[in-house]
Length: 63
Image (cartoon, rainbow, N blue to C red; front, side, top):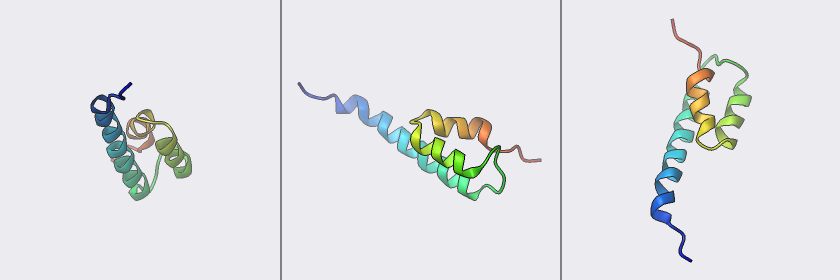
């Protein structure tokens, strides 16, 4: 039985891009909604949803 890598690869790549982008944003951000260590753990441990949650509710609104 062959594993369908052509179907899984885009999801894995998307997850890596989201994680890296969210981690860089979280580290650069001075203030977040909640402790930074919590957001870093969520970004790293919860695939696809962790980074999305950070961008939706983790970052504080500017201005």
